Image 1: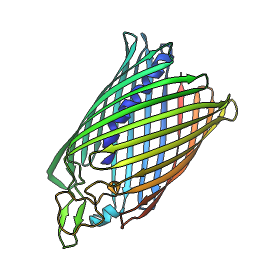
Image 2: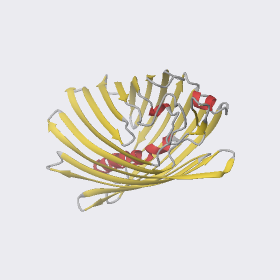
Image 3: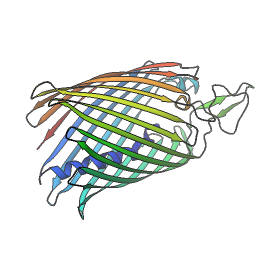
Image 4: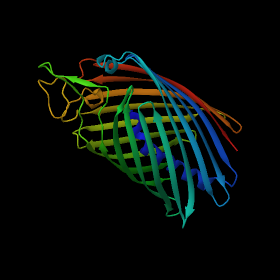
Length: 355
């Protein structure tokens, strides 16, 4: 269910990418992509994600695209065990469409996404625009998205809650010199409605057990920046940093480093490293002495850090691009006694054909 909270920002990212591609391609050009990603951790959770995406440019530099995502989730994590529900399996199906239209020297992108699981249904609409300035050395972008979520509970037709989300992002990208490019972005998300898990319960020290209770309102802010530098004609490095704050008391820092190199005309490789650190939510406790207004057993609201990386190999065969990647993430939950550590392995690959 937490996957739903990222849909709007994903739409805005797709909008920016589609707009950039539309500016550079000729009429009739396009591409199709298929990907398979596998996540498996030592908390008995496995996620297999299948992605398909297609994009084409029409006369007048209009670009249209569509995508579908299928997440197959199987879990017997500590959350499941604590709720006494045993291992569960479910699928999440997402479908979306977008269009990029040039308007008065800018590119306007509209998109829609529908996502459904057995206990969650969401609809997202997004609007974004971008414009190049100063001989294409500067790119300004802005976007807005709205999501309406309907939340249920398996085997309980009487349970129904709603969650509304408004998201916005503004960014600027700048050519710094002949070998460097940088950018900065600010994003905001306002959530209103049910934000707890309908399956998690919290047990207090006095013997009280109550359903998890989170605040109905949440405001999230993030400021991010990147620098991309060409090191040699075939190698480049990119550094990203993201600062996050919300009114639940969570603050986080994320740093990412990526090194890419062309090994030959057909073969490329990349290495990524990522470090993440966050504080806990104001109302989160490892244990509660008695029933409080807000109570949570969500480890994602605990104080935590994680570090990870992955390696990627790409192969170009004419219009066909193939890639494969493997990676790992190590998590440390500072005040979640039921699972102080978690290790996840990731693997995947994809194919993209252009015409």
